[in-house]
Length: 471
Ligand code: GLU
Image (spheres, rainbow, N blue to C red):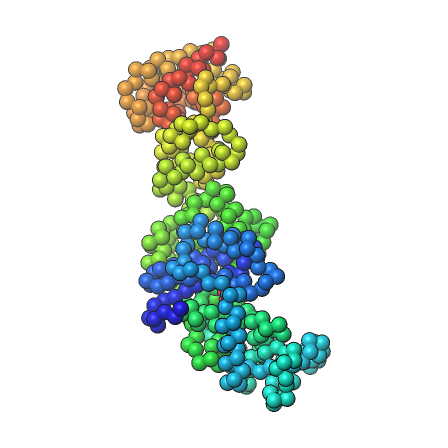
């Protein structure tokens, strides 16, 4: 599994205990960008050692979330639990070299000693740390503990946090194997990162203390430590730790709200990392620019307005065909009855509507008019708009448009201006009635765009239908 030493290898190592949160997604993205920008490899490891909390559903949620974001790993994912034998083998090596020891103290006794140590304000030490191992019987229940070097310090040169130092005496001899032989988290991470050839560990700063413990294990094994970069967590818009009350946290919720994956990548890249004032950038730019120097030490704040702005930008650039399909799916999910030609109609309308919406859901809201059927029923509220003089005016507009040769949005706009001038009324007088006639409910873009979105035959047909309903 080991790669050559010059290749950058990063990994995302989520614990499958729930949905993929945006904090996790950002960690995955940073690791991805760092590797891709350096011709390196981005790997995925599912940390499923905690058998009680890990679920297949959560594994699926992680895979789904990452593939929605298009953050694909360069190799098959590694499942940590499946590597338990390898973890135990490494612990055996540590025992043999004196860096770990078997601790036969009962759980009860350990609890008592721990309380005692706490009361005396000193670190807990197992009595077995300094005992002759020959006094114990490995057939009896025991845990295996790491024997941290005492006295001494451990220094981690973190790429984001700078140099951080711990006194080893402040740490404890952490358990590497539990009584049932299960490897513990810190041990498994070190063995896996080493075996996967990971050169850079980029993760949340809630793991900073683990970096100290893990570094000591690397040193004891004579393995080179990876570079560490501990990034500040994401906070809510109010600056408090991100929680449910701030709104959506899971990646799939953002997908359901109609954000595009490329917009999410762009936005998440800016959460805690900056490249000058650049707000909108492509994947290629992000890969080229991303560096740990640009990661700030203060927690980034989620900003939904900014996200909407970034999403609107990527919607404008998105392929119409793709957007039409997504909008169709939203209408379907909303239980609307659809017709075979609806995708083609949406596709035709897309260039005239997509720059008005910030999300695909908004786009669906704003394209209801496209999917309506003839004869178009005018909503009751809009009917009075068509009466009297306004109705007559719609008739004149219809006649004029029938003769209008070019059905191009700019030409239509100019033509409408001329029409308003000839009618000697402001556009405000014409607009609401025509929109009601064309859409049924008045929810549509401006008239020229609505006409362009509907196409010639449908537009004229709808105006005819409306005229039937005027008084
Ligand atoms: N599995 C850990 C978590 O989900 C991450 C461990 C790591 O990145 O080293 O928080």
